[in-house]
Length: 426
Image 1: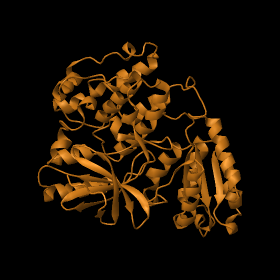
Image 2: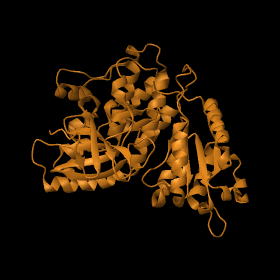
Image 3: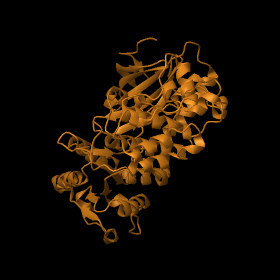
Image 4: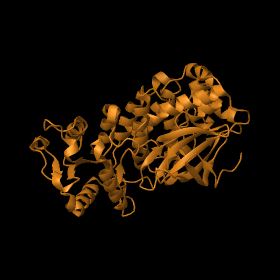
């Protein structure tokens, strides 16, 4: 494939190659219009790309672009360059989980790392989107410590000429070491195949070994179907029964014997105790913060976003659609529940003519009040907006900061971070 470094693909100036595989090459690029870094995944094929494939690629790219979750790499754009389709993705500075393999990882740390990925997959499944290829190289660890899932649906999209065939069988799509048995035997595949694949990742991180290995890919595939799962305690003698039981259930051969949806798997991971994880000055994970605001406040909120990032706060902000808009009912609950703190960025745009709080902000507050406790902060974006409406007093755990009390806000966030004492997957 032609090296595209130094070239332009539309408005994207290709800076460097950051990864390659059998189906695509990933580049770091500069979006010259928005002046931000993006990742460009360029698809190549040994055969000529058909119009049928390009239409399907466009359809799937549009579907993937609807996914907006703090632990999923967002699709920003798509197109075609010299008969090569490409995706534009948000650029994540960090490493892949594959680069951290090689030795067992404490089960507490592993559960904390993979829980957000499980929640992200459940969110995608609710939108009727499977991943098809969950594996360590598709899980990114951002410099902030946040795990991010990438490459939704890419494998089956690029390998199949008939999307309908995949929907009915799913045979052969994925990476052999992480493929569910039903993908091999030809029975109908559903979301529980992603549960199995994530279970393999969980197993490999905890034990330091892939459960099934062989000299050829086909031999590996049939081990998934025929051979019993090597007992995790064979590798980690003191592994708690509750952890081993989660692995055994997630990796059941029969999909009916597994967790029946990804949320059940995520809840099981969340239920594991974390008190035995050793804490040190290098293991704290940045606080997860969600900024909720009115759409007209985009410039001021982005300024606050960049200030928080510069101060080491892990902030979720949807760059493409700063306020979730018509999809807010899907996005805000997940954003709030996955966050440690919700910051309500208040301005006159946040209040209706009748004096009520905009529905998106009220919704976020209602959820956060139930879940977060003492972790809802309100910061006026402009000097004239410092008079916070009395109606906000109904939320018990709200702390209000003046715009010029930014240092006070950072201090409160750092205090909350120390209280939570989250552990990063290092």
